[in-house]
Amino acid sequence: MGEYPVIPFERDKHEAALFEFVEKVLGAEKFSSRGRALAWYHDSMPLRDRHPYRFVVVDGERVAGSMGHMPADYVIKGELVPVRITHDLLVDPDYRGKGIAKRLVTNSIQTGDFYPGGMWMNVPCHRIHLACGFDDVLAPSTQTLVLDPLGFVVRKELSILKKSAMRVALGLAERRARKRSTTTLKQMGGARAIDRVKEFEPRFDKDWLRMEKSYGIIAHRNASLLNWKYTNHPVLSYRILLATGTAGTLGYLVWRLPLEGAEERRAVIVDYLVEKRDADTLQHMLSKVIVDASEERVETVSILTTQPWALKVLRWFGFLPRHGRHTWVVAGWRDRIPSNWLQDHDPWHICLGDSDGDFWTGSQ
Ligand SMILES: CC(C)(COP(=O)(O)OP(=O)(O)OC[C@H]1O[C@@H](n2cnc3c(N)ncnc32)[C@H](O)[C@@H]1OP(=O)(O)O)[C@@H](O)C(=O)NCCC(=O)NCCS
Image 1 (cartoon, helix red, strand yellow):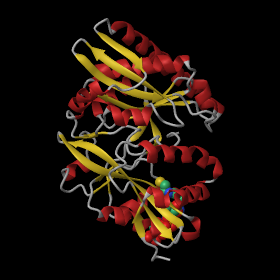
Image 2 (cartoon, protein in one colour):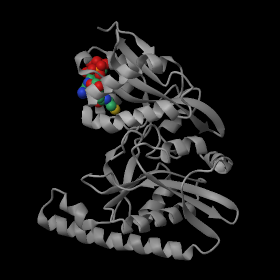
Image 3 (cartoon, protein in one colour):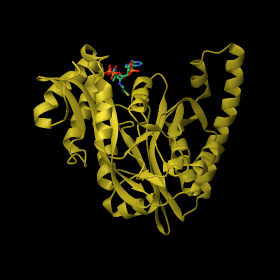
Image 4 (spheres, helix red, strand yellow):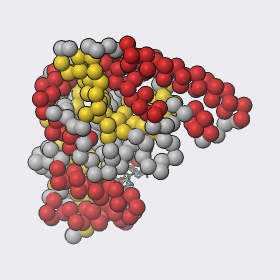
């Protein structure tokens, strides 16, 4: 069994078997949206020419296991660096427990690329990555603001007394967050604007790069990638905010309303970019999200940041850390980043939309 080869995915040869495999492992219901997202990735992901973007383990015509090997660019210490991100580690139940997952991850490391990221891992996947030589970067956690305290508290398994105390505290925080948001937008004045736009224009690419260079390490964005990810998604629908001031573009933020049918009506801010320490622009964009999310009767708003100054802005609005922590693992980093960056969040700009976050069917 262990002899089945790990080979680069070739669309014309392996796609049909890959889809059959994913549908078998995830089930038909999950595959109905996942399959569309996979096809969208294979059809139009802007960096898909950087072969291979996936490895598969094959047994004759059949795919027995697979892992994504997503090409991306990062800006590291001001320089553009091509990198890879591992994602979607999956083994057919008929072939599990035979070392296939480990061989897939080890194979990736052996390609010698730099692998930043891996936020959407479950516990086994995270363990396998560490066992195969990936290293942890301090785990980032999602920050959440509660906009509907009653809806939020009802689902908690707490005593009635605790529920009502929590509801009162969250109610105060919620009113304060709304007030701070409306006041922030009023006080912003005519010199700044936060506009909802349909897509990213290429003329802003130079601004994104300038902002990216203010961080130690960050995923590189441009209109082609951002539009692919956020305006052309086959399943998810995003809202894009653009911040401008008299001197030009100040940043963007991407968020989406809760997934249909989800138990918690959680809006998710998947991506934002401003110059490092530009707390004002982040505050303005968050205010707009909070006001709009309130109108849409959203229960909670979530965001992830690794930047300490951004965390301060979130605390000011009343965002609090959620319990679950994300993973963030790196490999092939020794020639790229100093070892102390593994213990320090400050150089990293990480959002929920990084790695393959939200890609498939939403990061609920
Ligand atoms: C997790 C998964 C990829 C492992 O595949 P596999 O080929 O059976 O794994 P391997 O045989 O290479 O085992 C690797 C190690 O992980 C451990 N492991 C595997 N599955 C595990 C599980 N579900 N829980 C805990 N540990 C697990 C194995 O015990 C082994 O550890 P060891 O080397 O110390 O003995 C497979 O079970 C799977 O596809 N699961 C469903 C999808 C999934 O969870 N993917 C991760 C998405 S982020």
